Length: 111
Image (cartoon, rainbow, N blue to C red; front, side):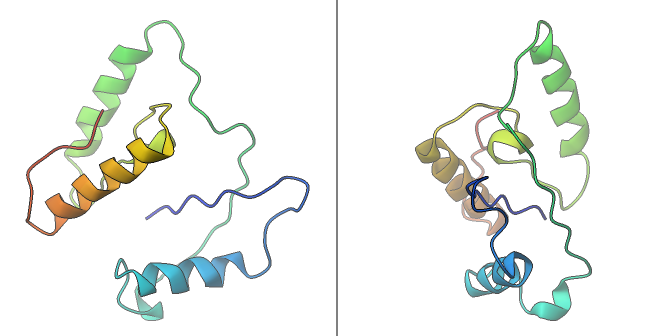
């Protein structure tokens, strides 16, 4: 699981960001308990927005098709779906994925 946490470069990584992320994931039900976590890694990514190059659509399609065959892995968000989207799109895609994971929907998140 990957949790994207936005922060200001001027302020740096927030204190105890790993612990807060795990607590938040537990509080919203994505994790059952701290014991579900095997490792936490913080990676600061500068300019993490997708940059489209010629031929990216074919490469994206092939990559996402391969990942869809991996059990228990869902790709979502700007990085996960390589889609420069707005927050409202991210929330809608997350709700669609949650519905699918809970068995309430078969809608696929936007690709």
